[in-house]
Image (cartoon, rainbow over all chains, first blue to last red; front, side, top):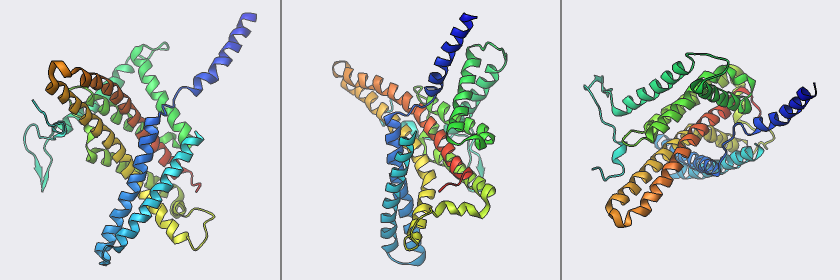
Length: 89
Length: 244
């Protein structure tokens, strides 16, 4: 009986450890790539939107410039959000 | 011998030329490697689940590990409601992983090093997640773009920013995978070229770099597949549970 109890405590000791380390290959490289692409993509998309709005409304380069800065803001916001999420994990 | 490091990314058609309307839909080397990827996954799972025993063999163990890895990833990031989408995320993860890994074999072709392939995958995820969001929440899904507790003066600006942020998801998803794979493979080829051009005297240093880079690239290949799948889960989570 004693042996079984011993085994039980041993198993209980080991189980949470196994669960923690089962998945999470969160390497620095992965995080770096995630953040940088997040920043660039928003600027790219916003400038693209601005360019086509300019073409449609014939407002010269102004909307594109405006949306470029808006995209930069969005990119920084995305980076802040992503890093918050990574920190929470 | 191909000295141009970009030669490896060339798409050319093999077999007869097929034309539908103005589209050239010939079977290319990219198509060949996609078929290869899918067949490897299918054959692997059929073989692994051939003899289902309580004490798993090597193949069955590997299949179970993959299954549990993805299953845990989904329940950790997207919760219980995302269970119905498990087959899709598993297929997506395996497709990206296996095509990245096939790309690591010399003289092969990396499907995921083309932006159109990764963008198609990302767009599929994006459209799917948006449809799921609207189906689940109806018009209140638009609340995703209106964060709570924002002053009314700033609201128009914030809504535009949120929409840009939402639209940038497929771009960042696809560009990340594509850029990683393309940069890695170009770098490998460049260092390989250095080994040849420096010859037996100076070629040892780039050869060492090449070996180190190959290891790094295998890590990146796995990591990018993982990141692609986990971001899909995160987007799915956003669509299933509105909490902005």
